[in-house]
Each structure stands twice: as C-alpha cells, then as structure tokens.
Image (cartoon, rainbow, N blue to C red; front, side):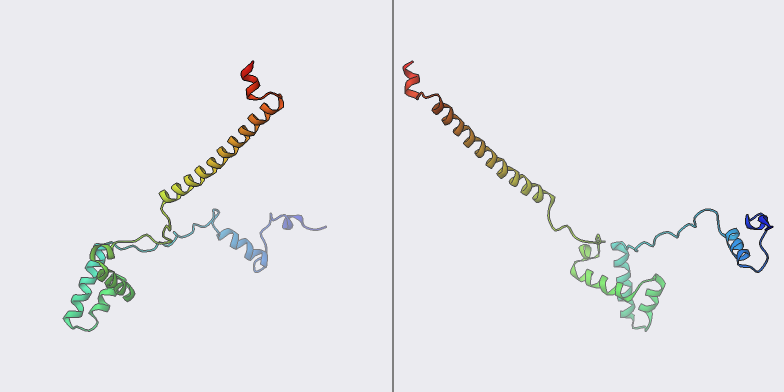
Length: 158
C-alpha cells in the first residue's frame, strides 16, 4: 500500500528533491503580493532653478577653468542636454522660455469653438425640420379644403 501521508503533504519532502526546493521557495516567499516599487516620475525643474543653473554654467565658462561646467552638472545630477535646452529657452524669452510646460499633445481646438460649431449645426438642422413641418401643414391645409368640395368662395356665401 502507498504511503498517502507523503502524497498529501503531511510529511516534509526529502532533502535535495524538487519538492523540497519548491517547499523552501514557498516558505521564503512573502504571503502577500510583493509591493512594486513606486512608478518612476519625470523630474520637473522650476524656472528659477533653470535660471540659476544657466547663470552658474555661464559663470563657469567665463572663468576659463576646464571641467567646471561638468562638475556643476554632476553635482546637480543634470545632463548637458538640459543646459543646452535651457539656454535655448532663455534666449527665446527669459520668463516664458524657462517656465515649465505641460507635456503631451496640445489641444488643437478651443472648447468654445467646438461648442459654437455644434450649436450652428443644430440650428441648421432645426431650420430644416421647421421648413419640412411648414410644408406638411400647407399640404394638409390645401388637401382639407379640396376634399370637402367647397372653395373659399362657397364658405363665404354661407
């Protein structure tokens, strides 16, 4: 007869077997789902911070010491592309160029323009509906006067 205790898992598996390895992995794994690390977030820099870094980099270049700009970038954890982009933004306009911008697709249309266009289309549709209704009413008036066999002149005589 088979030993059912081993199959049901009541007895510990023999050391060195695959079952023992699986059991050890289950025992060391946390009971709850592992917490995922916080989603990485893009760094944002204020306009004042950008201005300060660009001023320091310009002063470092003016001093003539080699490596001072690189030292500044390493100290601040920045890339040279940051400095290039910020200088370009500064040249475009001091305050507007260095202000943080919202990322992503820019809205292509104004909400008021969309609403105005929707209302115009609705107005045109309603005008067409009104014209159709007036036509139907006119036809019904002509038909009702023609069916009775009397004309407007006959009605006036009565």
